Amino acid sequence: MREATKFDLSLLILLSIIWGSSFFNIKIATYSYDPITLALVRVIFASIPLLLICKLRKIKIEAFTENWKWYALIGLFNIAIPFVLIAIGTAKINSYLAAILMSTTPLSGSVLAHFFTKNEKLSFYKSTGVLIGFSGIILLFFDKVIINSENYIYALITILGSTFYCIGGLLTLKLKNKKNENVTTSTTLWSVLFLLPFSLILESPWNSEPTIASTMSLLYLGVIATGFAWLIRFRILTVNGLVFQTQVAYLIPIFGIIFGYFLMNEIITWRVLVSLVIILIGIYIFKKNNKMIES
Picture 1 (tube, rainbow, N blue to C red):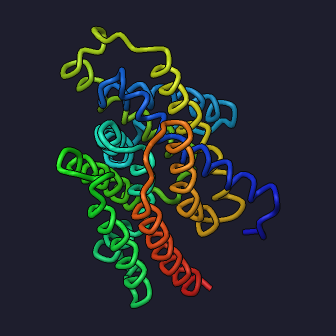
Picture 2 (cartoon, rainbow, N blue to C red; picture 1 turned 120 degrees about the horizontal axis):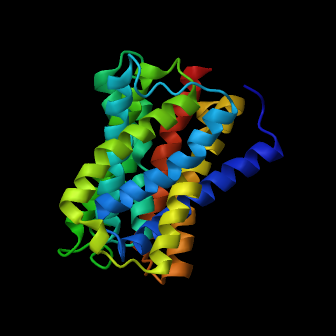
């Protein structure tokens, strides 16, 4: 992996902006779309550029080959379920709060990896980072302006969504020797198959009357925040490696707060800012120890 150039850093920042902006767009989309239908349309929009890329690069899509069970499980746990849960949670909490809660995915993933992998055990310093990071989340739950009796369950649902991302990430290790474009496209196709019947049966989307704003946000979520962003992620992973790519965890909640404050007029309290700093410190300690181990 090469040393990051200015162009590489620009791509990392762009990816952070795109993913940071996804949360307020999710909230706008929930004004008109039910959560399962929102997730379904999002992955349908995302699958289009991914399918085109695979076709242009002549990459075989293995969604329905002998490894179909792994693609199906990853599509369920890494895309379908978390997309639905995050939509449910973000509908009732501030969009920037969802961004902050989702930024702790590396910490949740490290706990799961400790129990379910052989090479990702928690060390003393990594455990310290995890504890510090989660203490920042706990502090958020003491801010009654942001999280209260009316919406705390939705904050927990959002955290549960991030946990499913971690489970999906662990399952993805089973396909680590496969091309990223194939894995992402194949799992996206499976997520469409999982979401479609539930959307049709439970939410009757043909009865909805979506606004232009919600539809544009949903289009953005599918094509840009999912399809295009994943392609940027592939490029960063290939050229600069996983450690460099995971730096987005520092930037996503920052951009999420900026977008939530200026575009959604969401209230930001001092506890939110303190919690964010604590979470980022926890992530930094955790990732710094990872770098020491890898070197």
